[in-house]
Image: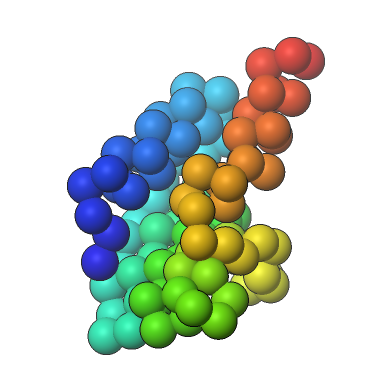
Length: 97
């Protein structure tokens, strides 16, 4: 599961992306081996991004994975803040334009 600190970081990013008009909906799924936060452009679409937490991969590939719309792995790591950095950069580009 995501802990309170992780959820706060994710929801902070989600709120800023919603206010920028990029995302409109989200879902949080908990399975036996992973927790997944997915953000959607529209409610009926596939998720634009998913942040996945897999504790069993913590030592091998990193605790977190950032997945793209087609399910491809965009980034892996053990730090949530650095994992969300590409999304933060995209948000900065939206503000500058």
